[in-house]
Length: 342
Ligand code: FAD
Ligand code: NAP
Image 1: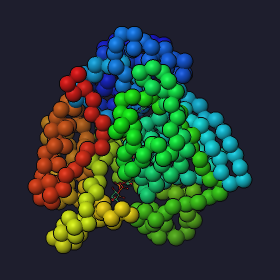
Image 2 (image 1 turned 135 degrees about the vertical axis):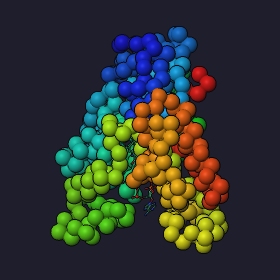
Image 3 (image 1 turned 30 degrees about the vertical axis):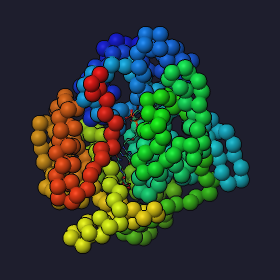
Image 4 (image 1 turned 60 degrees about the vertical axis):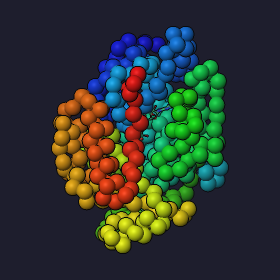
């Protein structure tokens, strides 16, 4: 185990923000994880688990042991006539897992292709795309408590998943290092192409049969064409969540702005398109402080050479204020902020 003091974090976050960690370690096994937790505990240093840094904003130096999970393994736990259960280590790359499962004929992850990051981070915000969320395939999350190494297992219900949220972002925030997840996939092809962008793709390509492989290819193709590649245009994906508002506010807004995309939810709330409101406020393509709102994707903030996470949050704040002023809707940011006041 190689603990590095004062590690610079720019290579460890896709927004390419500069910050220094008090200490940094990459762990390749559960034994190394326990050694690292013990190292931090014996020095009274807090621990910040990190995957590939694709959903974090560093606004200052991080007074913690930043612990990068790099454990790799995929184990077959159970196979029946129609389902398979896998245990996947936290350090596996999410997209590689999606590809691997498809090659094996295990179905269910196609819509979640090409999402950056590690498997261990997937439960944190219940990653989702194209009408599918991580919660639909999760059986169990395995973790270690940072405070005393105790192993913890949470079943699906205990994770309290919701839209881009889970118990790991709320009650258990900063308490666990996720070590692996058990996921259950289908052995028979079952595709979900109800999401408008996917439905449109298969309408426009009637000769392509919507097999799991074709859905995977479509998702990867659409994402490649729409989303900026963090290695060329540093970003953290969607910076804002789509707001969920009550039906009364949605109805008032839709009366005034009939073109505002809205999606009624099962619980009676209505999801509104944050991107549409941000665009309507004139932010798409705006550049400021070496930062910008992506010209094709209003939810994505791009770093064109800034070091400062503070400036990123200031831009996000100004965007949120103008959406609130024009629509009476409060936007929440999606990435997790570190380094403030430490
Ligand atoms: P990090 O950014 O390293 O960490 C995120 C949070 O998880 C932090 O709080 C961290 O402490 C915690 N964490 C990470 N690993 C562990 C662990 N092992 N144990 C405990 N806590 C941990 N998200 C979506 O939901 N859908 C999308 O379609 C999507 N598209 C994206 C596109 C782009 C271009 C980018 C840059 C991001 C996108 N994201 C999307 C966001 C991001 O990919 C996901 O949130 C992803 O799960 C983050 O993984 P990571 O390993 O990079 O986590
Ligand atoms: P899009 O297809 O242009 O759709 C725009 C927005 O409308 C999305 O945010 C989506 O919400 C919402 N939406 C569309 N149809 C919906 C439906 N039937 N029910 C509920 N909501 C609906 O979106 P995009 O920006 O290109 O992204 C495509 C997918 O990848 C989306 O699912 C998006 O969430 C995901 N993505 C996420 C990130 C991230 O960092 N979190 C980054 C890029 C893409 P949802 O976001 O809830 O799906």
